[in-house]
Length: 206
Image 1: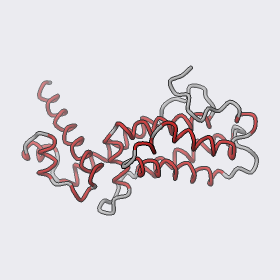
Image 2 (image 1 turned 90 degrees about the horizontal axis):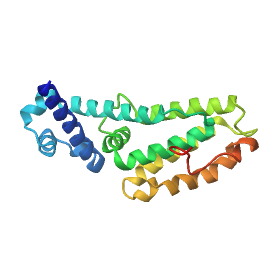
Image 3 (image 1 turned 180 degrees about the vertical axis):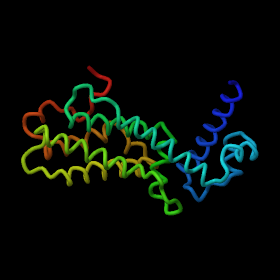
Image 4 (image 1 turned 120 degrees about the horizontal axis):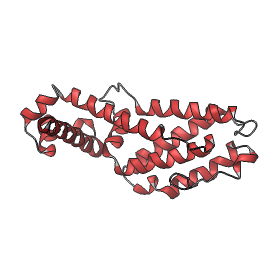
C-alpha cells in the first residue's frame, strides 16, 4: 500500500510539474529532464510512469479534463439554468486562478505543437450549449434571444478571460466576470427570471 501511495504521489508530481511548465512557457519549453527536475524525481522514475513526453502530456490533458468536468457537473441545487450558468462561470474562473493543471489543459488547446485528444474548449462549449438549450425549454430566455449567439458569447468570454488572465489576474477576478454578466443577462434573460438572477453568482450562498 505504501509503495502504491508513493507511486501515485510521484505520478501526480510529474503531472503537476509538466502543468507548471506548459502554463508558464508553453509545450515547446518542456523536456523530460526539466520535468523530472521540477518534480524532484529521477529520469528513471519518470520513465517508469510515462514512456514518453507525449504520454505525460496526455495524462496532463486527462487530468485537466477531469477537473473541468468536476466544475461543470456541480449540482444546480434547484437554481435556474441561467443562474447555474452564471455560477459555473464564476467557479471556473476561480479554479483557473488556483489550479495549474486545469490552466495548462486550456493552454494545450491553443498550442499548435499539440494535437488535443480532449479539447477542453470543445467540452466547455457542449456543456454551455446543453444548458442554454435547457434554459430555452424552461422559458428562461427572452423572445428573440438566439441560443447560438449566447453560446458564442459565453464560451468566447471564458476563453478570453483564461488567455488574458495568464498575464493579468484581474481578468479572472469575480468582479470582471460579474460585469460581463451584468451586460449580457438583460440581452438574453426573459423578464420574469431576469430580476432573480445574480451576476455575481450564488454558489456557496443560501
